[in-house]
Length: 405
Ligand code: SER
Image (spheres, rainbow, N blue to C red):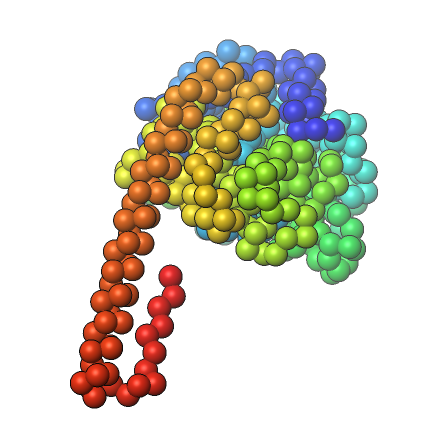
């Protein structure tokens, strides 16, 4: 199943179960939500509903939300799973169904829609937290037992893993995550979900949003008990397609191919440096296209800086790959080809996106060239001074000036 089919399978599964399909909101959060610079989760556009400030168009919603997370930017490329931009599939209940139904839906879709074997699915639940004054999430544990999960596949974890909050304050709640066991080829039997392992991959987070966290650390109760779930499309695609990394799925692999075509280097069997560079081009190329489509422009501030940073990181990695020509517009074009069907704004804004990509790349290359010229000048001068010193007998002939750039 290709990523596009997984997206559609998810959304239509929930539509068939009375959820209203809602288009992704912009990566730029609405002005009433200053808690984040960029949209980081599928629930973000629905915060006013969870808080009870606004009435939702329907009590059950489903969406595939564009998300962008910056904390992992340095890891992108070096690991099998880290990304900046991703699409988050989600089903939401605003005061309608709660834990029991959320668990049943997640299991049904994982088995019938994604084709996962039930014995390969493990779950984690909130094991309680003293500071929050909460015990283990017995309700959630009971729900998993009810659908046939044995105790050993229900793993209890603490607040860091199984309590979800959208930011330092706001709607939050205990969560329960679904993991797929990829088998002994990916790690020993002693490993468990929640460990830093390639064997157990988390693919779906069910948040039981029932609290609101206030600035003073107090936990209040929300007007209704809600469900917020999130499944990263690339993660699910990696597991459904049985590939080793998110970059090997059809979606990101077609982005990787752009770097391969431009550099003449193959991704399969490549050394670490090449693999990393090709992955960075794929992730950052996709991310920058989506950010530009939502009206973010490269600058030195806030979200504009996030965009500039990933564009420049991609350009530098292009150099690592030996790409001489302007190449960001090629990444833009491929993103539009693979994701334009699901996100019409990419097609609508195609020209503007390409224009920004080209001008930022040209400007940065000029800066780089200028920097290199300046550096060359400094090196030449240093060498000249050494030569002079040597002639005057102030330096032994053996001293070398070594500069690595
Ligand atoms: N908000 C939760 C998350 O981002 C579930 O959607 O993981």
